[in-house]
Amino acid sequence: MTTDYQKNSISLTGAVSMGTGVMIGAGIFALTGQIAELAGTWFPLSFLVGAVVTFFSAYSYIKMSNAYPSAGGIAMILEKAYGPGVVAASASLLMAFSMVINESLVARTFGTYTLQLFGTENTKLLVPVLGVGLIVFAFLVNISGNRSIGLFSLIMALLKIGGIALFGIAALWASGLQFEPSKSEVDYPLAGFVASVALSILAFKGFTTITNSGAEIVDPHRNVGRAIVISVSICVVVYLLVAFAVGSNLTIPEIIQAKDYSLAQAAKPALGQAGFYLTIVLAIVATASGLLASVFAVSRMLAMLTNMKLIPHSHFGMAGRIQKHTLVYTVVVAALLTIFFDLSRIASLGVFFYLVMDIVIHWGVFRNLRHDIGARGSILLSAISLDTIVLAVFVVMKIRTDMAIVVTAAVAIIAVFAFEYWFLSNRKITSHER
Image (spheres, rainbow, N blue to C red):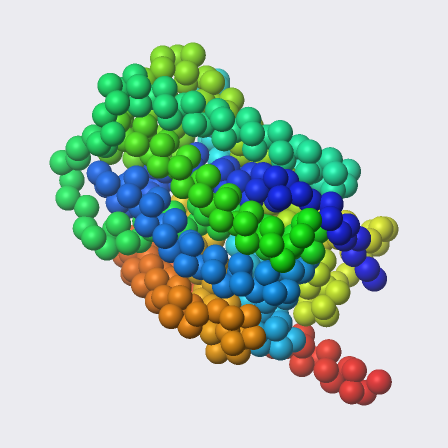
């Protein structure tokens, strides 16, 4: 069983478009309202703090990718840090699941914005239907191959970055260039702001898509790190621009009321009904392209984990190579999440899975690899500390407001580690018997 990786098939520009393609999807269209709900008046600052934490986190990935560029990306990092055992396999699966969770977040965002075109306030059941439809479309495009995805990602990245930037500038201009967000009568605690940073980090996590395609990027020892820095920097500018535009045209209660489609709502007072519809179209383009890039990356990662014999694999009667099978698994799980979870709970699951995996990576690199790759221990420890603080506060906030999702996340994480322990133990026994 082999995977079909094409060296030098992704340029620096293509890698940047892939990274921004995943990030600028649900990251800004769905999470803006949820971040404002936690952070209040200064929610744009949450994106900036989230970017700072992300740059600290990206350090481990950049240093490792510069030294060992791989199509396995995060799985490769974990295996080198911990060996081919339970920790590496479990954390890799957590990353894969967090990416699949992000796909369902993007899919539901697509459905939510699409329904705004028809003013369908009372047909929320159509959101998962539309979301699943987008996932199926992403599957069909992905089976067409690398070059189709790369070209599509580049075109869509240019369209949505330009479009979202124009939306932000136009909305700010229409509000009289009031860069200070609207005031709120509600006093939001510091804990709420820190918890909101967890969601902001989720809006930037798409940079890991670049890490997972390391072996296919031209001059990967140099360009993987450059692509990560450039894509995150672009997203920082876009997110801040849009956040200030939304805050200048809507009050915090208005943003929260329309939290699943706040950008479209902000376009109404700023740009009129035409701007409202154009923003919805932009959201549809952004979420569709983001899902395409994410499905591509997850299927690659799962294929690598299969080849590394860290997860089981079954053809289920399907023909073709491994990546086609993992592509099917990816879209099936994403579709189920889209059907059964709302945006808020999907985002929360993504935070739990991603930050736990991120901490595991930083600790492994700090403990076992920092001297080999020339990484600074102080930066690695800072990344661990920032992730831990944000995760802890987010957990406390969710315990108070949605205990069920905390329990679900905890059970799922424990189940992943328990499953990998069982699978790897049985694999060793079988190999020994043979």
